[in-house]
Length: 438
View 1 (cartoon, rainbow, N blue to C red):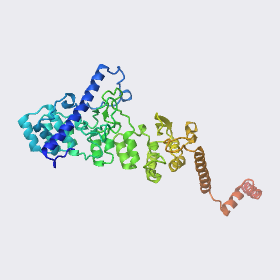
View 2 (view 1 turned 90 degrees about the vertical axis):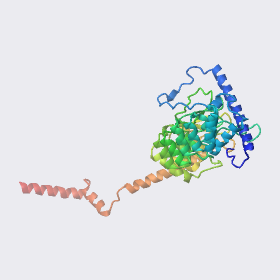
View 3 (view 1 turned 180 degrees about the vertical axis):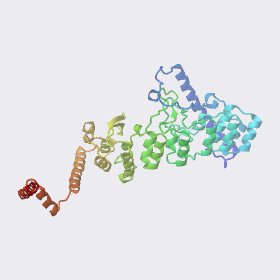
View 4 (view 1 turned 180 degrees about the horizontal axis):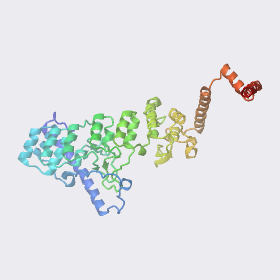
């Protein structure tokens, strides 16, 4: 899509012209949405930040590029301009320099060249453009719809610089930071409300530790839920108290990753650590409890969560509408029929009677793919664990009680006030002592 090195130049220009045409359609839809919002603005108060008022303000967003706000500001026909875009994507710095010096292109043309350089990881070209007057904009991170849907009438997907299938260049990000980018800046998406996919650079880089550490070291907030927001979203823009990042890290089972995020501000109070570890028995990608166990022990031992935490979590059945319910880790594990985990929770103090005994009710975890949990299975599990605990307690008491030897028993008997023979001996001794003293 970006590499035209093995394609004849006329073919490459034709392909870029098609991409620009699709991008123009996306930007036209965006401008139409903005006009409708301007005609019917949100009521005062709806856009307040609610619980985010006491948090430091997010850095201002980067501007949108001129080719996004102004129709037909870049060409689909000028061969030399199209050649400039190809040079930006291929990293042909000499050709880029020549075009800027000879043609003095508009800001829109420069900005589109910067977008193409960004998504092709062309650091030198991006740096040159920025140093020569190109304004940094958010389309270098969240790209226009330049590629057609995968199937006819299918959805057109946004593309971001941090997508998992991309190799993000840290030197490129360093250039953007030099020219005003901050990892906590949000991007204006392409749809009215939430986009068809939500993007968070930290989540996308969880399995790429150098990139993750780079973002965190430059102030990335692991409590932001996602960075691309809907054009007309009147709800709090920032989603500053999200469980998203820490929850994803917990699922990986990587304790060092969780510790890293917590050290950089991920607050377990807003996450559901023990709930996240529940795995549906019929799931396609089931993780054995033995693999999840170290993370469960870590979460409990460091105080990230309590075994009886009640949290609102999605009830993952497939019957609409979706709903959120209060659950303990134990009741959620029973719903998923995740019996090994449920047993571990009981062994570590889970109270099965919380939430009016919710765990003992038949529950679908993923209706209709898996039948409801059987309350009798839950009762049997609870009885078995409680029985083991009682046996363990009795055994411990016996082990802690002192073992009486024959000599200690004899000594206790002699010293007992109810031992008549011993009492007589004491009286005789006391009488003889008194006689000698008189």
